Length: 126
Length: 273
Image (cartoon, rainbow over all chains, first blue to last red):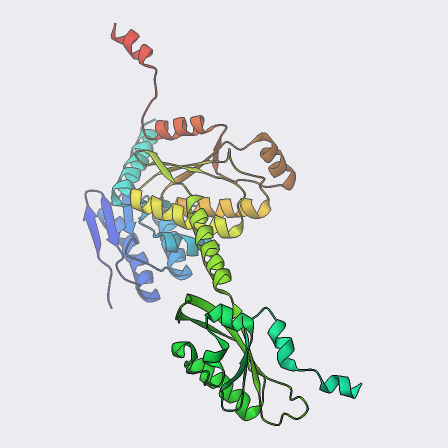
């Protein structure tokens, strides 16, 4: 079965979803992300969806769930590059992505992750 | 009474009508055209009468629609539907006509079929419609003046009343700009905004959620006191939208969040000394 590659950069994981993918593959991706976080002790995950012109509710929900699950095992997730059309569809569908951090592009997402992690470290030191 | 009726000449009536009219016989030759027809198409009775409709005006009426419509009347005697003829006419130039052909009631001794064709010049009307549509579109575009005021900070003044069409257009345009500029703070200024109702509020909430999905944050500023009062009376809640009293404060907040501080030069000079 086709898999979406997960790249590791320092203590972050980077995932880029390039094509409209099958429900099964996104489910596998969810598992892979969680396993990889445990394996690499990653602190943050960047998921880039800028190449997607459409996103169905299943995929959006799975992404959101993945973010919450990753949070439970100690990694922050930022979804980057959501297209305007996708954003409008998700809003029309009434899908709330409140728990997920979003960013315009990878740079911005990287910045947010760094901020979140520094904040967390600061709290832990206290 | 019957005698009086027989004396009515339909052509005399037609002659007085202001709209261009022609009467055809069953071979589609013109029996009669009224003055308005002559005037509209800049022709003359002597030039058209007796000629086929497809021959007059340099064959301007020799089109498929005219053929079909007239043949339908001749064969089934049904009243044809009006149709639009849009083309470059000789002498009078580009015109749009609604053409209404219909079978004529036969008077007294007339036994052959006759068709009356009415022309309606809608060129000006169509032109006006077109301009109106264009202008509406232009105004809609103008009404979303998204301006970049600093790195990653946009200002969107809300002007006039928002209906759902405008709100959707505004949201789409705003999202495009956010994607293209990579903005992170959007200051929506409601100083020029009319009254707000529940529908408009719902649209604004939708827009803010969509903006958030793109990784940006909306800061609402300049909600007028009376608007704020109506909003509370209507039970509209803006949820977690950041609000500030004035545009200035909104800009200040966004700048601070981006790590810029606005200080008067004096303060810096004093420190320097």
